[in-house]
Image (cartoon, rainbow, N blue to C red; front, side):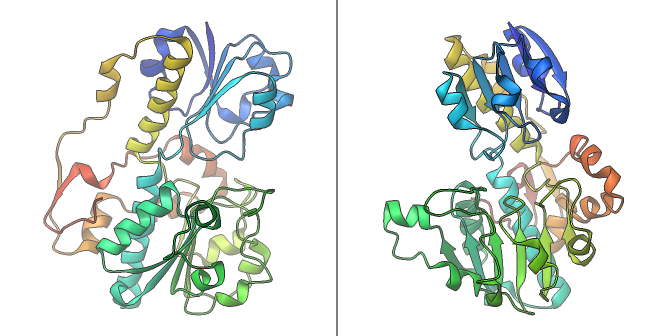
Length: 345
């Protein structure tokens, strides 16, 4: 069996090596010629999987080791009987930790008590729900907005979009969708950007395109934290310059998340082929017990991982893709013993 795999997929040789002959390459370089004779295609977000890529190929299984879906033409795969699996939720904890780290750092910078602030969470799926749980552990009041869940579950504590946008801190965690009852493309736009003001802290750790950037770049806020951009890696340099953290789409890039993305696709491929999983693969992430001894949460989180290095790394935008592909090791909080209690859920 021939497999084409994005070479940024975590531990792809150890996890997928027994399935057959692997050709690993950069996601942006995967094209119709390279997949023509492959039965299995495993990608991350940099490969657009559609008719242009797959027409005339032998591909029968597509796995995406990231949570986003906007790079996948699911209708084409369904119409051509190609099995598809996406590692939904694999990076949810990593992104939630990114946002909480920023909030705690900003509280220190601006001298406010985050327990007095409201946090509007736009999109309460895998990431948003974990962020809400961590925020509530820290005493941050949340305003949850997710019309898809509201329609399906009738959640009385959820709020409308405008109420969530009026929070002190607003963080987006929606997928990128252009159609449907509740499309998320330019969800924050000229019709509702007035809810964002000079005292707002605004996050995009969802997808580029959910916030209209040409308005954002002219809107005064207290701080912006931007991990997801339109036109990556050719990002908006005005927003980059003015952001507290301007990072290269790495909020979900913990070791744990990257492993889980590959592992979830591995499980799906085993099911597709009807083969037994290798139990040893579940133990690939084992850093042992890590410790950090700081007497406050801000210094504890910064010692675990300082996201400022990610901002510094892309001062030269030519480093955007290289840095993502060679991202420093970052473990999630549950691996750590700490003097200061961490909001682990």
